[in-house]
Image (cartoon, rainbow, N blue to C red; front, top):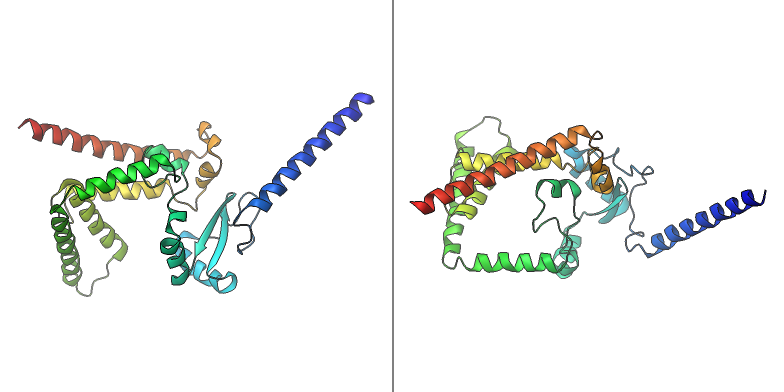
Length: 265
């Protein structure tokens, strides 16, 4: 009997400590007072958000919850800004407070090191400084890059005019031409929309998006990274991540091999 009472007391004390911990954590949460739609336990608002219509959903929510609101996806709170004034406040007036990005486990599985999905730390600051110095090193070459961008925009406009009254996929077209600009910045040449390099970069972009869609079951892996060790779970997500990683690695290896061959000529 004494052993049973002792076990009960230990369980009760543990429960009180855990409850106290979560209450204190909740009280110290800087975004807990931000309004937002109620969600389900664990899932949050994941089931009520629809990616293709997300912009309209957020627009409607802003009418009820204001220009700054909060949604939760698999336990991860996300602050949504719905007005020009709030964007200026967050990105310009207090821009240094929002320089970091949450480390997404799925993205890190594809590209372990980058300067985008990193928290604000000394390593990120160093990498950004290196990138800035590299851009400045272009010198007059910056003007050439601007020229390439302008010419690419003209090509896109001409392409739209040539299609006349035919239906076009504006998202696909604009993304493809953005990839042309990225290719030009990476390799210092002007590329056409149908060029293999541009199409490969476009494919990488598509595979990255497929593998890291925020509103999908795979988002659980970002919220609970330890689930990555259980490969039998979320098999479709793991397959997409593997495909994306293969496309990225193949592109990088091909370009490095080409650079080595050209340097030997």
